[in-house]
Length: 481
Image (tube, rainbow, N blue to C red):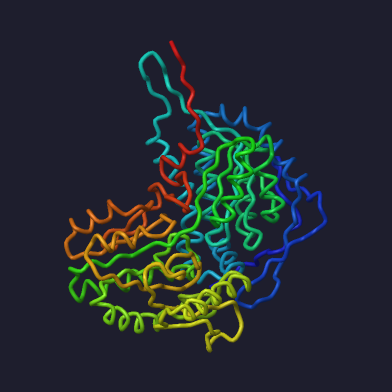
């Protein structure tokens, strides 16, 4: 393929419709996790940068909130076209800055943001913008200036899932992308600028969470914060926002269960194990909704282990730019060491290693790689309870029927995603309806990019995507007659 030149060194932030220098002098490195080399830098933003951006967003809010919905939707459509035109550049940036395998980078890292923006016209039509209730007319209005703080694992999709619906709702935005994978946010800012979005409606400030992120959450001009990241960081966001108080929407961690019920045929069981492993390993395991727990009847544990030993051999680890690679490196050395520690401590605590392990793969002597790893552990073990955020599947045997499986599935503090597999479709659906989680794949059901996405418990609150994703950025005014 023809590879365009990709710029990974950025010297400005985007505020009030212009590229301006940061008020600070520091920079943050951008590291290629496959080569382990620094490939660029971005400005280390300051609270003063946030203040400029928040004030610009506040000035732009009255005009943008009164812009007709049809025009706001046209702007989103224009951004979608811009994203589509630069899809290869977006995929290459995601691959080089976070190690996303090329096929995944094209289909997901570049593909989902296009859907996020392009779907706005359809989902906006599902929003009840106003309705009569007795002698009142209830009117949905934009919540105001939105602070959007996003992670590195799906760097542009997570941005688009906040920015697109916020813009449609009539809000203005101050964005802090992950400093580890900032390049795609710059591409979006360029696309937004070319589309002619009014100055101040979209603003981009790079920097670290403790500095720029906390400045966004605490700024008096910011009316709402939409955050995606770890549960620990989400607690800090909620704590700071409560001082105002101001609205928050938090999409946090997960420890999702894929539950195999006891009526599966041998073929169905094999498909379920393969599907569950795929759901764990996607994006090299760096997915908050990954199915990282596989619950199987204890009587079929040996069968599951044999299949997993085989299937993990086909999860090719290597250069993200090689089209045959399925597992790229983790995003950073810190993340690699964190996952290695989880694997080692799980084995020390009594988990049994079925495949993989903490060692560097022999085929990749450099790069922040983790072998696709399968462990067997009992319910309640630390490795079964805590989010690892790497390509690590924990197989959890259960002895009883559906009730015990449900108790184990619902037995972590999280509730973001899940899956259930059964020979009887009605049984699978009945089980899914009792799982305490934000989404459930029933017998291999595929991800719906316009359905509401969010969690229970320590997986956060609020919903992204679909009509509810737009409604999240609105408040209600009651006009009484």
